[in-house]
Length: 163
Image (cartoon, rainbow, N blue to C red):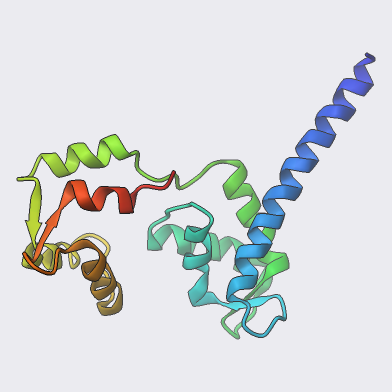
């Protein structure tokens, strides 16, 4: 095989990977594109990013929006797919914002008693990066056993981990 042919094959492989990533991003974006005009409300960007298996905090989401908005300069509060796509493609190619591995989460949970009472979970929701009221209610409905008002780590951990 010639030297140029090796690079050509590699370029085709890279292009195929990028095309697949862009397709995945576009599909996720379209779920939130309510007007079918290749735009989404800026408030949906965090959800789109997380639906793609990335887990940035709100400050990191804002940094990504700043990268998108460098070119956009759209005061309407909407993000266009063509501006979002290259930024998010780079994020996925660079494997940024990966989830915390299950064993690390389990170790953190086990350093406590093995469970949290509902009121302690609520207190945790207000420290660090605070939850909105809706996020807290959604999380409590999934995480806390309704009969005991306790969050058992071993039961909740699989819901936090992405395979």
